[in-house]
Amino acid sequence: KNEVEQSPQNLTAQEGEFITINCSYSVGISALHWLQQHPGGGIVSLFMLSSGKKKHGRLIATINIQEKHSSLHITASHPRDSAVYICAVTPTGNQFYFGTGTSLTVIP
Amino acid sequence: GAVVSQHPSWVICKSGTSVKIECRSLDFQATTMFWYRQFPKQSLMLMATSNEGSKATYEQGVEKDKFLINHASLTLSTLTVTSAHPEDSSFYICSAPTGAGVRNEQFFGPGTRLTVL
Image 1 (cartoon, helix red, strand yellow):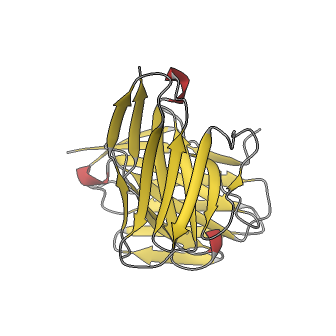
Image 2 (image 1 turned 90 degrees about the vertical axis):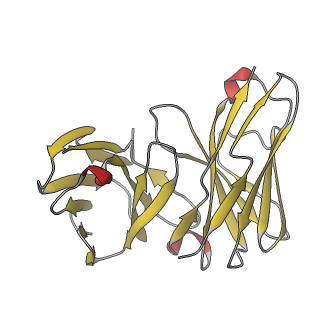
């Protein structure tokens, strides 16, 4: 049983499209993280959320604690956004539960 | 943002040898660092929490005698894969928070790809 479920697993979009990636979790959490992993393997932390909404450039992340759900939105998608997006939650202490990732490909 | 480096970026070794991977926080101090492994097409799996000046905390199912972790300074943690076998081949990644524990933003190293022949 996965504590963190992401959808979709794979996503292909045309450049310029609005993209949404969803994350549902089954445990109580102190924070939720959205990570971006590029083909070479390097990981960048995009957002850390415990409530509400955060925006950085074309990226928006929202979280609904009551529904145990978070979404990552990308506006005006671009080929350089192609990567694997990973949702991770931290319940308590130093636990870290990761989703299986969403592989995004943006076509020019 | 903060920078975390890893060395080496890739390593190939023979079965039975030991391999040491370094994780450094370049512009901040980290009393805690985290080690993960990632198999192809799978997500990250937390292996252990490295604590400066004390023993590491290992996740269930991770052999502490096989994956030795040392966090001797506030900027360096090392993971040694002892007596490596082909099934240890994986992508190993470290991260460090800028504050205390996982509740703070994590900065990830670029990863080390280990291939055991």
